[in-house]
Image 1 (spheres, one colour):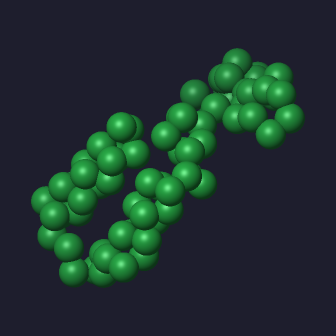
Image 2 (cartoon, helix red, strand yellow):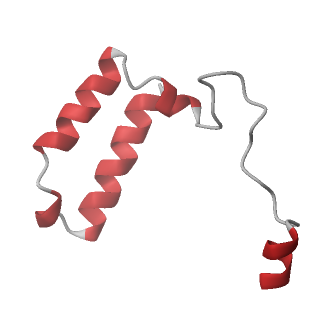
Length: 69
């Protein structure tokens, strides 16, 4: 594995993207729209330290679904 890394055989980060464009999913590109602002506010208002694992998963699922529509 180390030999592969040192030889450069592993894929390098993408450098041919136009200025300002990266390999980020479309969902994250829309973070400035109204829906995304509401999702960000929900995350800010949520006390993540008090969520159970299933509550956290359900919250993420609902927020992702909200952004995907």
